[in-house]
Image 1 (cartoon, one colour):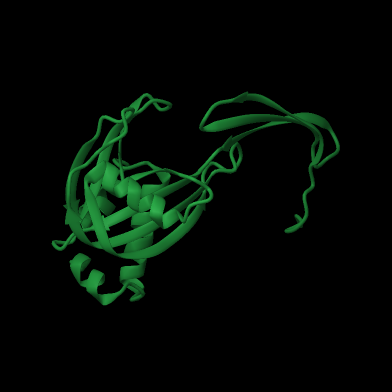
Image 2 (tube, rainbow, N blue to C red):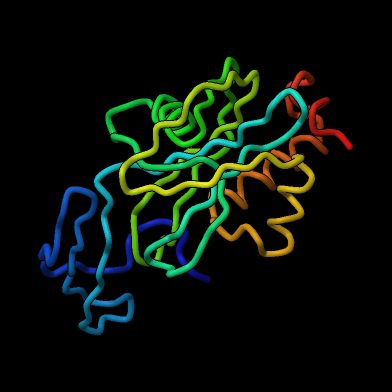
Length: 196
């Protein structure tokens, strides 16, 4: 039976192979769990990832669409982005919500902490549910060309089920909200907005 604690890898050396303002790529010379020599590359983001499922007073989710450079394809997602590791993730999520959609929220609920692609990166994501929205003016980064659309919550979940939303933070967070609605753990003021 595999061990549930302890690190079976032996790191012999670690070398930064590439870095910029957002990431560092580190190559580790290692002994594998079976004692064989090898290498292990790890991508270390400088910040944390944040995402938010914003629910408006009609029970709609605000989705953001954009072209994702690494995938070479368009992606529909929840509002999300990076945050400073020394800043409360909810504050970073609120900043992203405002930048990408122009929305602010009166109410916030932490949803989950995720490890994204944990075989190649130590990136951590924190996601939230937000409601009591007020609309302002979006101000996206100069790297973002965004489309914003509002869909009923059930349709956002259906988009994830059909594979039209594939972003891991979005899929996991939408499904978590759906499960919370089913098991009664959502605050009633937001649960009633998304009930069929």
